[in-house]
Length: 81
Image 1 (tube, rainbow, N blue to C red):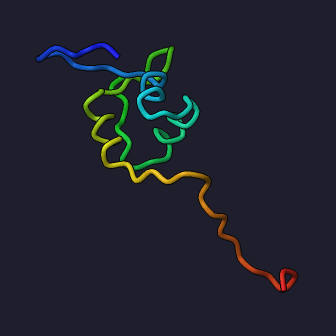
Image 2 (cartoon, one colour):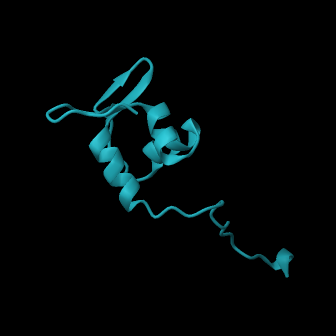
């Protein structure tokens, strides 16, 4: 990524965030849509949302990242016994 000079605002799209986080663009979109602490986009362009880089990096620093899929919670029924 390019170096941000003092006084400049670092802007990031889904692709840049995916590279920074080491995840897919799809996962970034899932985080943006479903994680309450993920920063809101500054703007929505035809190419996709644009985020503030500082806010994205702050989220990454505090993100409680857990590998793998979350466990499935389901009700046990009589058929399961």
